[in-house]
Length: 292
Image 1 (cartoon, rainbow, N blue to C red):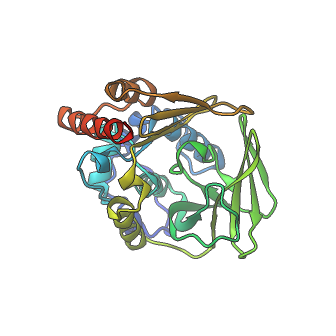
Image 2: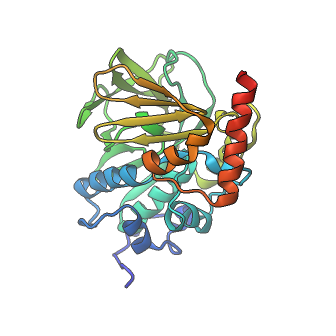
Image 3: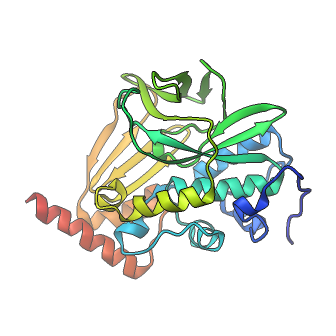
């Protein structure tokens, strides 16, 4: 049975390719059975459920595949094959779901800092979302790996948000952008900064191509898998696994190449096709050889 919900005349549905969306399949993928009315409570619960089910990862790139942002490819990868993805994939799919449910959702693009000073001008390249509810705007992001917010954050200067054990703050940077910060065991950490300028699917297609092809892109150079959990967060980079717990320094585990597929299955819920797993093992073994 297909879930059918009322549409809002305010929506630019073509921006998100809403009509081909298999909403029931997506909701089953994230194991969500709650209300679907376009309210803040629904938005919060959907974001939590998505993050619990869909990991952040670049394994398609490092095993020789291609990342595409059309809805059919996104649904095949993230929903039917139960894989994960990075920001352009995850937030495009999530925006499409929100649009179908009647939320007013628009695209934005951020400059990733990941600890850098906020006066540093980094390139635009991180897809985020802006959701408007009852005249109030909210930052929504399901695609910034293990450090991102687990719930919507009100787009208001100086707002502080606690998502379970994890804390966030919105400020203004010296460059005049919104600045999202995350409180870690060693203090406030700059995640990214962004403006109110709208961005569209065409912008994300170009950014996605650079992220998945440029030789300096971290997604081309490294094996990446991350999970944004409520109690524990995981970050796999090549053959190092970091485990983050609230208020504690991260725990580091060094992995053997042959252990990688099992770690991906057990810790991230990621099962690769046999040919992809073989390619991943070759990539991991080359890392071991290079470090010898």
